[in-house]
Length: 171
Image 1 (cartoon, rainbow, N blue to C red):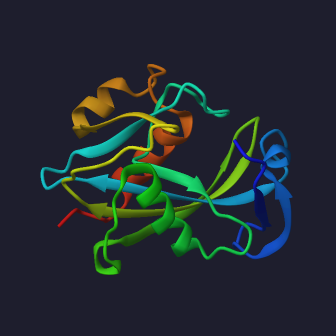
Image 2 (image 1 turned 90 degrees about the vertical axis):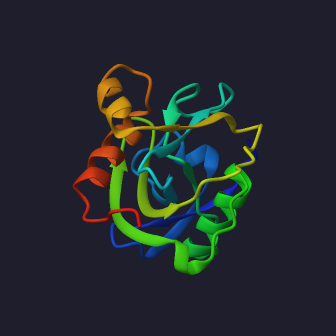
C-alpha cells in the first residue's frame, strides 16, 4: 500500500488535519473518514467481498461490499464513486445511491468515521484483484448464521446490525 495522505476529522466530519496511512493505521486517536457501500440484489442478498490476504487490516475476511478511505481534499461522495469503480467495477447513477448513516468505528488499530451508502445492483462486477479475492452474494440468513464465527471483519458485523436496524429497504 502506498503511504497516502488522509484527512483527520472530528466526529462531525469536520477536517482538522491530515496524516499518512502509516500513521492512522496504528494510532486509534487519529479519526479519519471512510466510505462503505452495501450492494444488494433484487432478492435482498448482500454482495460481500473477501479481503485480500495482503491487506494490512483484517486480511482474508469477508467484509462490506465496498469500503475505502477518503483521500485528503477529496469529497466523501467522490471517494464513494471512486471506490465503487475501483473495487467492484460499478458505476451507479446518483439516483441509484442512498446515504444510510454515519458512525464512528474504533478498534485497537484505527478509528474511522464511516459514511455508509447503499445501492441495488445485479452485476456483472469486476473485482480489484489486488484488494478483493472474491465477491459473492450472501442471504441475510447466511450472514446471521455466520456472525461471531470469525469469517467476517468485526466492522462488517457492526455494519450488518446497523443495516438491519435501518429503515432502508432495497427497491
